[in-house]
Every structure is written in structure tokens, then in C-alpha cells.
Image (cartoon, rainbow, N blue to C red):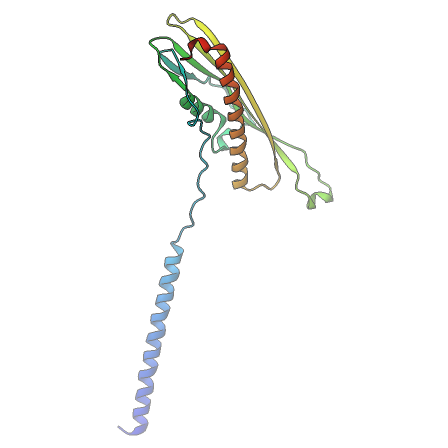
Amino acid sequence: MNGTAVRERLSMVRGGAIRAALAGTLLVVVAIAAAGCEITLPKTPERAPPSFAHLPPLVFDLGRIDIVAPSTAPHATDVGHLFPTSPAVAVRLWAEERLRADGIDGLLRVTIDEASARATPLATNTDIEDLFTREQNERVDVRLRVTIEAIDGTGQVRGSAIADARRSRTLPEGISLTERERQYAEIVDDLIRDYNASQDAAIRQYLRLYLR
């Protein structure tokens, strides 16, 4: 083999080696990209429901506790199902954490008369200025009304305490889903705190004979 042939042979070998190296690099890049596609972003942590576990329970000299929620037809403006914790769920959690039965007979009946969350559209400005302003375009109204009755062993109602709490909040147009859920959670937090204070006072006034 002469010198020219040798040089051509070496050139072919080097070219093949370079192509092989480039192909290997490409495979590594593709593998890294594919692995990157499998990476999922962490989910936003869910907001914990309001809790009253830090408060001492209200202990009654009664045999058991029943929670009653009369069925009602859904209202066209109901949005409670969109809340991280609806008013209905919040008041049930309140009852589980704050009420205790430690007696022989009788009943503490908790009737959820209303646990609603409704949204009402608000009129907004349609003029040219509206392009540069962010108006409030929705009002959310939440309400809790609960009747708590002490019933003796013969079925007679011996006392009752009623609490009625309400809250309202307006939301701006163009609000994100995350921000909307935060607003919903905050209004329920405020509502259930108001309810707790009102119902605690009513129980101590009207059902004090059954408190331990």
C-alpha cells in the first residue's frame, strides 16, 4: 500500500470514529430530553380546612349527638361545590371538633338550617376606560344558620341555641382559578370563625344546664 492509500485509509477511519462519536452524543441528548419530559411539577398543596381542635370541646350531659341537614333543592347561583371547603362541610367539621356527648340518655340535635354559598354577577363598566381598570364583577355570599337542641330521654326539647353567621366578598374580573380558590377558602374561614363565636355564646346562655 503506497503513502496516498494509507492517508486515505486513515482519513476514512477518523471520519467513521467522528460520526460514531456524534451519534453517541445525539443519543445521550435524546435520552436526557426524554427523561426531562417525564419530570412533573409539584402540585400546589391543598389548603387545610378550618379547624377548632385547639379549643376545648363543649361537653354535654346527653347520650349522643345527631347532625341533621334537611335536603333542599340546589339554587341556580350555588357555588359551594367549587370551594376547597364548603360551608356545609366546615360546620360539620366544627361540630365534630367542638361538641361531645358524655351522658346516659337524651340527645343533642344539631340541625343545619342553611349552609349556602352563592355568587351574584355585578355590572361592570363597558366604556373604553374599562380596558385600563380591573373591576369587581362578582359578589359571593355565604351563610350558616344552625339550631342546636337539647332533647331529654322522653323526646322533649328542653332548650335550644341558634347561631346565624353571614359573610360577603367581591371578586375582581379576570381572577385566576388559584386566586379564586384562595378567596373562597378565606371567606369560609371568616364565616366559620364568626359562627363559632356566636354559637359558643348561645350554647353557654341557653344550654348551660346540659354542659358539664
